[in-house]
Length: 392
Picture 1 (cartoon, rainbow, N blue to C red):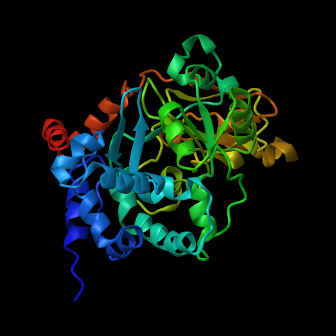
Picture 2 (picture 1 turned 180 degrees about the vertical axis):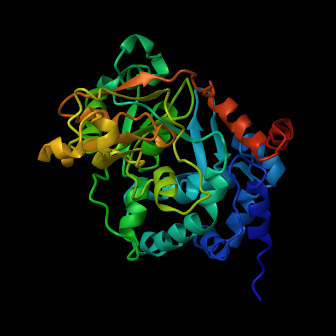
């Protein structure tokens, strides 16, 4: 009987971090696809906070040169993050969500390993990871509106303006969308019609991705072109759920995105995917033609068309006096509870009858990634201080 001790230690190590590895019949087969027993044992000892090989060598009892070689190989595969600083290179173990659902698809590889792993990843997410990951109140991404869809731009904070976010970073990259890539490699999943080369990352994460051959550097102008094309295609901009140093903008579809697929296509009680923006929809009923384009574009089903109630919509008129047009009139029905405030519906409205307006009460987004991680730990009943000490 095969000894799974190293893999079980890795599972326990991950469960004391931001994103754990929930139980599933396919978890062990997945881990064995990613790690040899020796690699699993090594990763079970690598902290999630950055350390130099010189710091790790005594702890792991591996000579620095050999350890660095092992860490570099794990970094190439997206299991360990490698950060090159002015004076030292540091390594940190990434979480299972990063290995499985982000780094594995960024390069867009379609080798036999990628084809074999994709169906397992889809099963694992659907059966186990989605509820654990999406069940947190604090989300990994939040919707950021298409810029020109906001009615009063004076209400826009810098972290809510996608162009201001782009202007705050200095290094831009694009990778293959790992969600679409994973679905497109799975013969049991429908092929996605959307562009795949539109997963954007910036600064330190972008540098890591390019160094490991998982993406390419692009310009600010190319970044804005990708975002404009995504908005035209009806994709939701999903940005790092912080107010500062956002390093990711995904362009998400409901058929593939980890966040949106879970909230739209999977049965309850899977919660909503992206953290909604600070905007909701306002409808000018006098201008709206109820053409249905916004309802077709809405990724969350927050907009629907319903036949108008003639007694309410045309009060005072008897049915015998209704014109044929009035008999077939439709109302645009809006469910704000489902709305992400993404602006996808507004972007193509032919009559400009809908706009985004600021919510009455703004969401309290985390300021930094550290704060975001702390909130997620607390929501999982983990002690952030104990987790920090364990990984120091």
